[in-house]
Length: 481
Image (cartoon, rainbow, N blue to C red):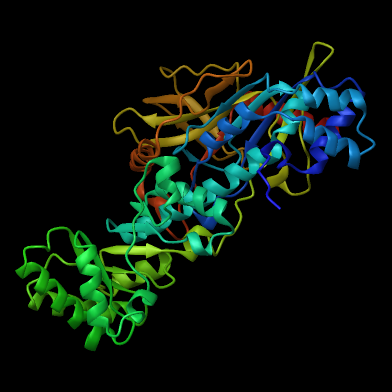
């Protein structure tokens, strides 16, 4: 049975069930505002890297229901009225979407995406947007942590075979590049993103020959410009590295050792083996040979290996990157914050006994403040969209929960983080290419002090509410209580 993906149906059933109710109760066209945001940074990181906006744009532009979809829904869900199914048949998104550009450093409770659209439209796109942002932002952030641990060394994504399906492997590879990886083993990225894939060999190639040396020689004959030899199939120091040195020597004598070359370690004590391998390679005159490593790596193991003086400059990271092994889900949410009924705008709030789940009402924007003297980030402020900030006047900001914690900002400038993506259903935003997004991440990270980048117990970056928004929130809480 062949099956072509249908992103219009890649949604939770209750989106359609609620849509049916909205339509039948004449609520479908009420203008609503929804915020997509995170409640907690992944992996206990100091921030989250936004990724996935390009795929959301593609999804919104192509979103429609065909005759086959309508027939299926009619067959299995008799509660869906004919007029509602006809609405779906003619569906196209007509609202506005603002979003943080990919590569932005985002923090809990900030709208990463803000949707303003007819209620049924805004509701219908929730699930797919969440699955895209949740996955790619998670992997981009995990990759960023691993790249930080590598401290200037190259990091490659080797995770495709361990990803939760080939689609997760593809978009996980995209997110890994955004997070700072210099390449990926996933060949499909060449077709979709124009990034050449990278890789070496598996143990099976070596085992398919009568000897390790024969395997190395043969590989070198056919791949002289990308010659990273896997040296741990039999015995790393007694067989693998010596045989690699023999092949490097033969090729150098033939003037054929002109590209990237070196070895890969995939098992054992990587710190010890890399030190010994480096010594052997240097003594043989191959000081510029690369020593790469794989073997179930993550940011903590890479950090520890570097502290132990491992002579590794290229890291291939698979399972624990592509699955974000220790933090397998980001948990972004999508909540209504305003609705217009009978020409009356009503801010909406979700209240919970858990303070972290109380939402921020209204039609909002996010401002990031920077110090004029050094361009370093000072704090973020969530405000209602109509509010104006005068950068020539001191600004008092305060913690929205511990309100006595206040700070006065002076000598600052700010920028709005949400930019228009769709207006009146039409795309107004051009997505940058993947390497431009990666550069944005690097530039943004430099504008945050090192304390925010710690792998463990990073400093908490302040995200405050404007006084007007905070008062609106308190008023709605008291009304409901």
